[in-house]
Amino acid sequence: MTVRRYALVALVAFAAALAAVLVGRVWLAPEPRVESEVHALLHQRLTLDADQDRRIHALETAFAARRTALESEMRADNERLAAAIAAEHGYGPQVAQAVDRTHHVMGTLQKETLQHIFAMRAVLRPDQARQFDAAVVKALTDPAR
Image 1 (cartoon, rainbow, N blue to C red):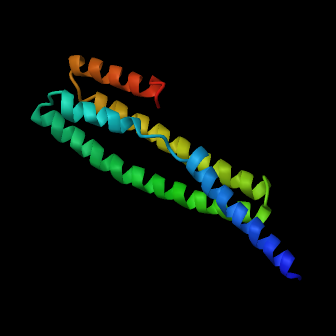
Image 2 (image 1 turned 60 degrees about the vertical axis):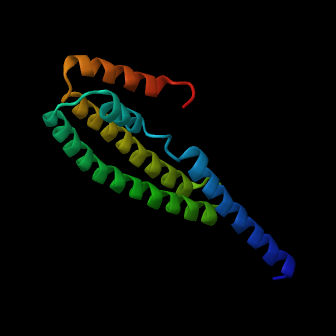
């Protein structure tokens, strides 16, 4: 192999790695969490009684562990995607499988986040739940997101 070929191979490998990073950051990176905005409402604007505060804290603790596990899976999926891109240099079967796996985990995280939000809502009084619902709708429909 000539020096020119080695340089071309190195350039293609670099471009594939760069593409994997861009895919991970632009297309696959999660948006700011809706639950973060909801938690701010819960802890800063709603007046929770001691029992509500205890119950919501327990829900948050349990969900934080689950979210961390799913986010770890997504990071591993991004690494597999990067390896697939480096191996195939295009949208081949390994890349497609890695993307599908990432979408599955992202969907699981979204579903479990919604279940968590509804579990916290169940702890609230009706007047608090109305404010909570409005904050969730706003967080999901805000064009600035």
